Image (cartoon, rainbow, N blue to C red):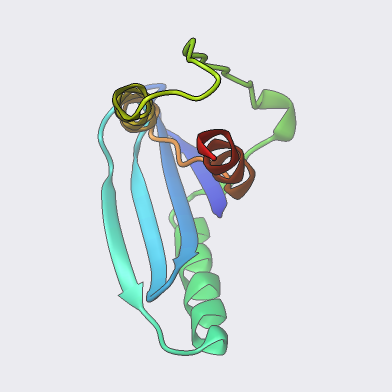
Amino acid sequence: MQRLIRSQKSGAVDYFEVWTADDGVVVHTGTLGRPGSVRQVPTVTAAETKKVIAQELRAARKRGFDEIDPAQIKDLVTQLAMSPRPPVKQLEHRRLLEGLVTEVLSWRPSAAASAATSAAEG
């Protein structure tokens, strides 16, 4: 996933995210703290996917979006006490909580976080 941001005169921050999916490219845009919008661009080949991502990023940069300064990124750790082998109901509760936090923060978990979640559910 690649993420760009843009500051508004009002102090609000807009985000632009783009990543690959099984059937193409996903573009997620919005303003921090508010629900964003998602658009999918279907692609067939890896070369086409790469081209679409480059076009989307170029267009976003023309609209004033830029890379995030790594020094400004803060980590947020959320924890939920669970049994070593949680029952299905606890796993459903965790997924619900993860979905709510994801929506509120306009954040998409990384592949590493998804792998860790899958391993924990083992």
